[in-house]
Image (tube, rainbow, N blue to C red):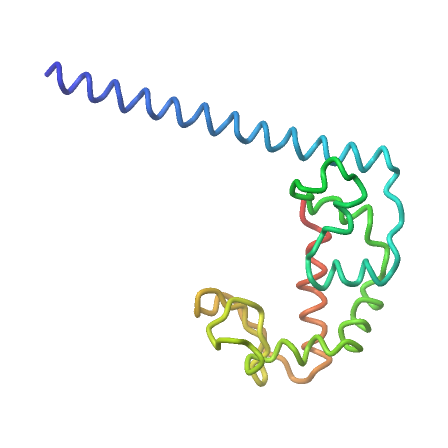
Length: 161
């Protein structure tokens, strides 16, 4: 009986420890995000050229934004900063994806491996694939519909908090 009580006590202590350390970790992360956002706010969100904005939206590479605040450039840049830096329109972005051949690059036959993670174009369908399994798919009739799907998916980054 004593052993059982000791084991239950140890389990409870471990649970409490993990809950507290998790809460501390989340607080540190939130504090870091707030610190980075305040640093960008102090800069008054300098305007990025259109080409840089288009590339950020296409690739998800936020390093041009991170480099604006050198003291935080090695930390993760919060996606919520995109709302302050992306001034291009959805139409400009769509035209850019068409002009750069983005849709063509997304054809599954261009993947290194047919089960490679990504959002791929397969004939008349766009698939969201992870570890070889399709999680979502969109039926398309033509390349215009394909470009609309990709634009909408990539544009969702702006609505991430």
